[in-house]
Every structure is written in C-alpha cells, then in structure tokens.
Length: 101
Image (tube, rainbow, N blue to C red):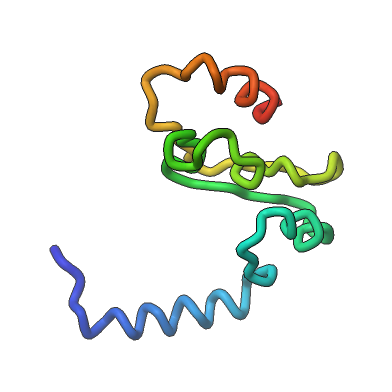
C-alpha cells in the first residue's frame, strides 16, 4: 500500500523531533579529511548501508566509507554494507584487505 502523501510532512516533523531529542549529530562536511576531527569525541562510528563499499561507485577503496579516519579507541560498526560485486578486481584486493582489518 502506498503511503498517503498528506502524512509525509507529519513523518518528517516527527523524525526531526526524534533526531533533535535522541541523536547527537556532527556537523555536515563535504571533505572526508574533516571526519577525523568531527568524530574525535565519538565512542562509536557507524557506516552504511547499501553499496557503501561498491568500489565502482566510490572509485576505489575510499577511506571515508571504511572509517579509516578512526582512532584505535573507537568502536566501528558497518550496517548492511554491500559491494554489489560478484568478484573483487585484483587491483583492489590489497586495499580492501587493509581497509577491513
């Protein structure tokens, strides 16, 4: 059943209220190199989801999508990551292995 379009603004408002009350979000950045500083006070970092590790879309093993800016004290979680590949090109195997260690 399709959502009733009049309910969408109500959902957005409810989510914004939830977000404000329960989520401590960082500032928005378009430069992945800023992520280390932005996340320095975080205990847990989460990345996800669908196709976040698709090296075709990210043009290789992108450090931001593998949380490679994290510190050793931070817990790392990937939520439903996908590569959308049936096999990994040889050129990326070493970088992927290093990113997932």
